[in-house]
Each structure stands twice: as C-alpha cells, then as structure tokens.
Length: 401
Image 1 (cartoon, rainbow, N blue to C red):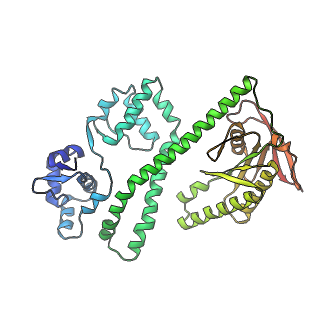
Image 2: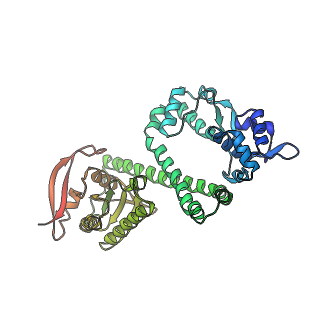
C-alpha cells in the first residue's frame, strides 16, 4: 500500500478522524481529490501532533498560511514510517509469559520510554515482542536474561545520537552558518536523511552480527580448549609463544559526551591512533582491533609487547593524552578471520581490568621469556581475577632504575 484513506491514516497514527481533519484544515496535510494521502503522511501527523503540545495548532496554521512553514519536507524524513497495530501492549503481553512490569523494566533497561498497557503496539516493536515470546517458551527468565545486557540500550542510544549529531554537524550547521533559511535547510536534508536510513540499518545489523559472531567463537574456543585439556589432549606450550596485549584508556570514549569540543575529541582520537600504530609496529606488533576504551594487540614476541606497552604509556603522558593501562599474556592462540581467540586472549583482557593507570601488568608466561634490556618485573602476588577460577601470579613491568 502506497496511500492511505483518511480513516486508514487516523487508524495507523492512533488518532481520531477529527484530529486528521484538523491537520488538513491547518495545512499540515494536503489530501488528493479522492481524499487519500501517501503513507509518509504518518511522518507529518506525528510531528505536527508533537509540536502542538507546545505550539497551538492555530499558530501552526497561520505560519503555514504565511508561507513561513510547511510539512512537505517531513514526508522524506523517515524512510519507513511506523504504523500502529490494533492490538495494545497490554493485550500482547498476556501471551508472552511475562508480566507488564517485566516489559516496562526491559524498556527501562534499553533506555526507551515504556509503553502503557492501553497503548497500541508499534509495528516495529512486533519483532522484538515475538523474540520475547520465543525466549519465554524456552523457559528463559526474560527480564533476568536481557537485564544482563543493560549496556545494549545505552550503546544503541549513543550510536543513534552520534549518527544524528554527525549529520547535523556535517550537513545542517554549515548551511545555517552560510545564512540558509531553516525551512530551506530542512527541505534539503530531509530527503537525504530518508535515503541513507536503509543503508544505516544494514550497516548496524552487519556490524552487530560481526561482533556477535566473534564473541560466540571466542567463548566456544575457550570451552573446547578446556574440554581438550580435561580429556588429556592439552597442546604442549610453544617454546616461544606469542603475546596478546590489551590497552585500556580510561574515560576516552566518554570525552565527546563531556565538555570537550568535537574537534578536540577528534584530535585526541587521532593522537591515540597515531601512537598506538607507530609504537606497536616498531616492535613487530599489530593492533588487532580498536575497542570501546582501548586496543587489542598481537605480538610475535612477549618481550616486544612489554617494550611497546611502556613506550605507549610514556608517549601518551608526554602528549597529554588520556592515561592508559596495559595487560599482557603469552601463550597459544586461535586465529580466525583476522582475530585471535582462546584462553590466552581472555586472560590478557582480565589482567588489564586489574591494572591501575600508567601500569603494565604481565602474566608469569610473559616473565618466563625474560625481561627485555632495561626492564624489570616486580611481583605483586597471586591475584584473583574476575572470571578466572584460581588466583594467578602477576608482575608489574617497569623501566629498570
């Protein structure tokens, strides 16, 4: 369906037919002689309905009549306007096997406004609600299961806000600064917004799948390594094992949300990237991937990983960049699609979590390779790390006095 009758529009927007006619009288909507509108009219009535909570509809009508305002650009603002289903959230939840309080809790976890029981279901929420039904049918405690993914809502919100902020910075603000009238800017950017949304959705879905696939492989490799060890088939320790290092830059990703200008944040990011690449490559290492607050590295030789880590921390301090800490482990790793997996990787990530700012902590396997010239290892004892069954000895690497 590419067009709605006025009754269909009212139904899908969750409004009365009288409200739709009021928007027509105000000039928000322009139905054709057969009294139909394009499905994108959903964009118009939703935005106008939100505006009239603070701006009287009569004032909107006067602005439209004076050619100071129109809603035509809104048709292109969203690629796929979301209609409402006839079923309410309260009715739908009854068949999910969870309470409505549970649903409200999940929306809060995802940093979305919770619906009311009488509110009609958004069509784009149907797939999510069906997923909850499947989880419930498998005997999973849905609120507990999804509550452990609390970060998901925050990260998705930050991603969406970052996308919009970049669009405003790159496309809107330069035109406003050049003196282009606001309405003309909206007319130009709305079609661009609608056109790029499908590609953005594909990108986000693809990126999530790649990270999800890597996380599943990482856990599977660790379980299989344990299985082989329990069955008596543990591989012998390599004579010269590679090293995995994790660098964590405390607070780095939060800089753009604080009182740091976008250009300053970009400069900090560029400085971090430059130092990371040059210091690791100089020692035969490779940044495997940039993570939320840092970087994962692979080094053929543990001693080179230690030297690179000390060099990075010193150079970050010299250039007044955010403080870093590093955790290093050595041992066998599994390589797949450009990434490294296994218990060696997992332990390195646990070590960096324990490290303090400006500290390089290493495992006993790194120490066995002997300290590089000018470096010494100081034991800090057997440390209980999160997710590791037994305490392990850790050492602080530092330049020899």
